[in-house]
Length: 309
Image (cartoon, rainbow, N blue to C red; front, side, top):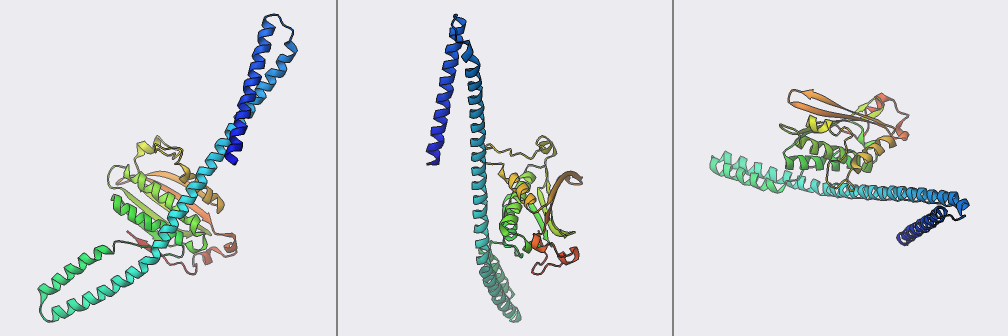
């Protein structure tokens, strides 16, 4: 119904533009040929300008609506992907428990074989167990925030696949924030960092650190970059072919930073192994937590520091 109504409005606007244009052309033609319709010329001219302005405004509104619709779809897809990662994490605990049981059984069997002096059989048993570990190819990060868990777990898997060295340290009070917000924020940051590092010369690397800082959650992200490519794109706009359906990641990052009264900055740093893009984001703790002092914020219940490479 909304689409039909919008199409009807456009048809009426174009029809009005055509009629006014035809009338204006007729009046001008009669005026030039000696007619007496000069008094209608300003009215028709102003009407034509008003209709042009109306068409321009309608185009702007339609473009904004389409942009909001695509951004909403992007956010929904991001949430769906994040939910899928979070759901997959629940099954990893069972896999880890199963792997732990198999490890204990294997170590017991190997110990028995070694005690009997059967070293070759013990070695074969260890090699067999090493092959069985391949089916436990999943990896999971566990913090007090499911969104962080899903985003970092995804980054670990993506970086392993692409050959990117990824290190992370999560020491901040992530449990106080909305899981979807932190998940979308980190997914976009880490995806952009990984893609940027792949375009850099040398070994690609990404480093993430999340800490508490004076009543804020501080997210610091560093990744190797191609300096020339970055300087040619200072606005961090998308360089993908489909620019209409991409580019919402940075908008989502800015929206979430503003939502938590935060701030962000980025700088290009020269390191021994090349150029690195350093991004730092500060997110204010939710208002229900603002009454706590910075010292208390450093000791958030339920948040445990983790790190990995």
